[in-house]
Image (cartoon, rainbow, N blue to C red; front, side, top):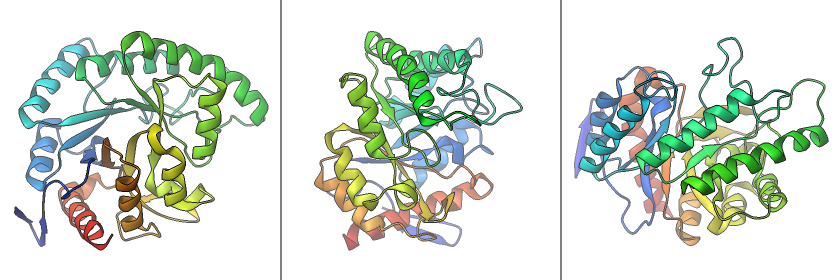
Length: 295
């Protein structure tokens, strides 16, 4: 199937022989209403959604949030799509501080409430997983104190997820306490290796922080990998770039996902490209298909 969008034409649809599903993050479509974003992504060949909770698509604290999630699940069923829930919303909990509070701040009640709501909505959405991260250490707080704060809070969230039947994917983030896949594996071990706790890997982050690069990171995650975010990155800046604009070896990354038997959602993560979202989505699909052939 060939789709033409402006000056970008590409082969659209699933990757031949791949066990994973290509999706797109709603944080890259913040200038589109959700229904319009779904129409664009369907026509461009995607088959899954990475739903970032918060403005503008689904406020988890709105009175009608559960109803809207149920309607979205109906729409996704019509499309035959899967969904993952992302929790990297900016300014949802504090209008003055991006992403705060986190799980490593002194007071994290608002973050804990948010993550419980994300799990509740994941039940309604029948989501593959809820992706979450640790947070950047506050000024003056060292790693030891950060771990002391993180572990009991994660135990509580893991218990809530277990009771709800929801899988979690902890995401290593550059500059955060949990920065690499090895850190995520340590966290999982410290928590007693709960079955519901898997790992999210952002391919672009691997360029920046993973000692063994994207191939080593994906292999280290292995069967614990429950969610993949796709973007490019340069090795000196945490800036999500379109595929082909950084140093990510996309063909090697896709080959490794195939090698380890990943069957989840691999969704584009381009939160600063909403101004050109339809074309970026089309170019991304083309880049992924080209890299899949190269592998």
